[in-house]
Image (cartoon, rainbow, N blue to C red; front, side):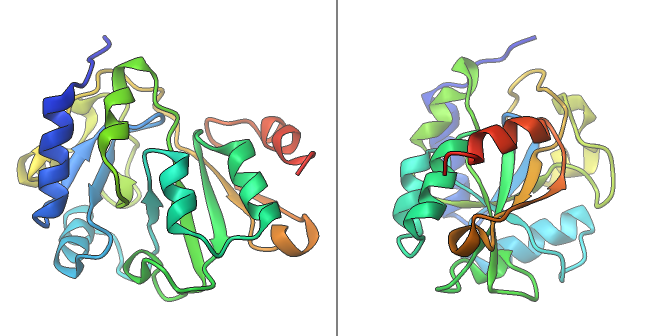
Length: 209
């Protein structure tokens, strides 16, 4: 079943993030758990809810590619070309974090940043109204199953989150993880996890960059 989000849902998500809350929300892959990436209390609470070790990094998500590019002005032209080729999409990109942005999301290595910009279909398109970044992890207990439906998100997470948004049934496959840390210098990249976007599609997208 498709559940369309509206402007009221987006307003509530924006308020939740601004007030240091933790939200369960739909993405283009699986249900996510998100908070303000610059609010230490919110990040620590998200990790505590998931039972996620504090030394494991999380991704930073933007809901539009333009917002991501504005937030990372230090990226080189080849890196920006790679982002335009792969995003928005069901991928997590590991990038060199030269200016040490979003340190709370980076775990023990602030030189690396994980970036997500989801491909929002019609029912999730209103999420583009969230202007800034959020720290994002899957809405499960650490090491647990990814949630395709809201009912598959552990009850404890749904009950203790400050906001829960139902986006209906999602693909249920995690994002593909691509390491682009050396891409700006040499054009080299590595596939760290094949998820919803096949490896062949990643290669095809990056070949012209």
